[in-house]
Image (spheres, one colour):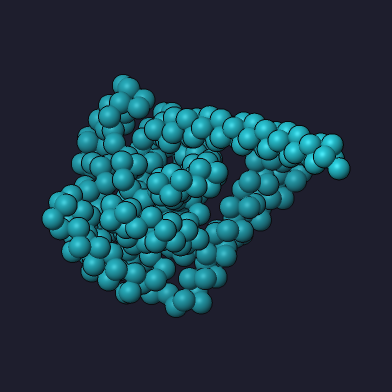
Length: 317
């Protein structure tokens, strides 16, 4: 969900955030969720010549090449770390041969991925900017990997939200923005809910539509239904720490604490910087431990009473 968990630039990494924002502002880019959603479509013409007129089959083939390329790069990094330079050279050649099979946008993103992994701080920030501008969710795993790096944490988290909020159909992106705008008013909750319902009806594969509807269901205190939408969002987008943390909040309200612990741990495994969720998890684990001790104590008392009762019955015989 997005109740209090969407990103802000309010000082998580102090002066580092200010440096990030200054970097982007000099380039005419503001990386707040709302501004990115507008900028993507204002700047989309820059990528029109890269966007393929692809069939679903060709897109699937390109995605398969991207996944294969990601695997080869990981294997190459391992080979280099282990100083197996022969294997590294072979994997490098395989990588080069695979790049032309990517779509034009993916070839651009592949270059951004290289810059993100091995560039300087400013090159990494520029790479994230480029990824956001394409709006392609295929880079979400790369951005998620940045969440363990304090220097780029805020920017990477915001970039993930910005990409999740977008849809390839500008009309559906506009509908998402309309729903989010309505969410800010308690009197407009039903209209906001209907916006997200329409999004799901139009595209059942739009993960963020389920996440936003889950938020509305949470506000409406329909926690079981909200859990269902959070689970669907995670099925569609396994890196969605917002859906995982939202599911945990629902389980807390349902007094299903062990399931809440599991959901919060999932969220933190993706995004270790969710400080409020981390604090809540600590308190919840302590509560669960106390409940378990109490249950064990009750069981011991019951067993003792049962033994005493059995002994008394035996004496009477």
